[in-house]
Length: 389
Ligand SMILES: Nc1ncnc2c1ncn2[C@@H]1O[C@H](COP(=O)(O)OP(=O)(O)O)[C@@H](O)[C@H]1O
Ligand SMILES: [Mg+2]
Image: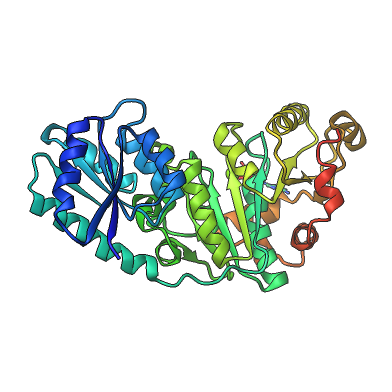
């Protein structure tokens, strides 16, 4: 079978020349050309090449943006960038975006053909590698609160561990608080493997790659950490996360996502990808106001995951009246986590989740109830009545 190639370059002559050079090789077949990244994406809706030869600078959509999108949507396609000398600084960006090789203009027919053949050979081996079969019904649970310091990460970590303890199923915790991640500290993990390593190698994304960068925590859960420094946060796009989750779904029963409190498109996208959203609230006015806003936005976006309302520090004496809050928001609080500063702080300092170090405390029991609820199949009724407020 021949190697199918798509040529993408805004200069028609370049497309023609490359096609001509490749036409002399019997093993290679040029199946089309496109004049910018957008046209290339349109082409892929109809036909799939094995290799794309992609120019970097193009109008409408450049080669880097197109490569990012293609490597996420069609990871089986290999991209080789075509560049001129002055653009070498873009090459690094292109490789991060998922390109596999690059050719600097002017190149010879030999260089062109050997790059196409080499990458095709390497990647067809990769594509043939067996990926494990999907788990019966993986569930993605995003934990979010529009207010910081409310207990989102505390609940995410303890819930993940408890879900594994209760169900003995495979659980992965994804730290997507990209600006100020805390999970590494809460689980006493060293920060040298993070989601950034996965993104740098996104072109090779599969179960093996993820396994290299996932921590195996001694509680039995696996953890993918957030970038080490906030300036790397922009590299973690929702599209990359979506493709990472797709692979995680083949490996885990429960994918639990910790988020930042910012109400941005990234977090909305995470909620959109989830089967269940845990909204963490407290009985205080600013949180309640923000929760109202979140619900409006989720409604606007037509987010279809099921929402579970979790009241943290429910035993605190001070605060608003719970029933009034429920009435004001048009919701019913599903789970309560009691307040226990002593247990949470000592767990934090030890780097051990309290469901392990203080498993008999009331707060651990509350997490257990939450875990049992989250492990249940979602009733259809619940899914549909989501936005009845
Ligand atoms: N139920 C609780 N009772 C007492 N303290 C809590 C409780 N939940 C969280 N905390 C404490 O609140 C602080 C913020 O928690 P954290 O999980 O980091 O919040 P977030 O992720 O929402 O910013 C931590 O010091 C944590 O120990
Ligand atoms: Mg947090």
